[in-house]
Length: 156
Image (cartoon, rainbow, N blue to C red):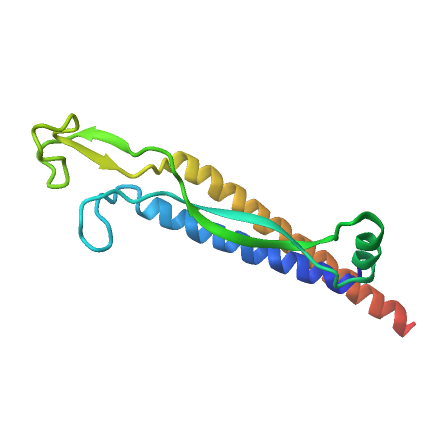
């Protein structure tokens, strides 16, 4: 692994954590949304980012490991999907709400389905993503300083 790989790995982490923070911000913004984008009643469903290692035979070391051990070296992270949380929606009794179930025969009569977004959980996830983003910036800065020092040594 060369020192340039450090920039690519940190860059992939920065991009993934930025997307994660964007998805969390969308979840928080829709924490009280009880209608779908087309206007029909139905709560917003929380979204989550799924990440996986980004591997490849790009480096010499990765090639050696893949030949010897049958696997490749992680070369960063990538977002494999943004999925919806399958957990159940929250229910609140509010018969005056226009999005409440209006069918008297339904056991949910008068209840409004609210999104499955817990703002406290989202804030914890946001702090975690923010710290991971900061850590990747620190790695980028350290790699940059090492490259500058190497150039200084080369100048003699």
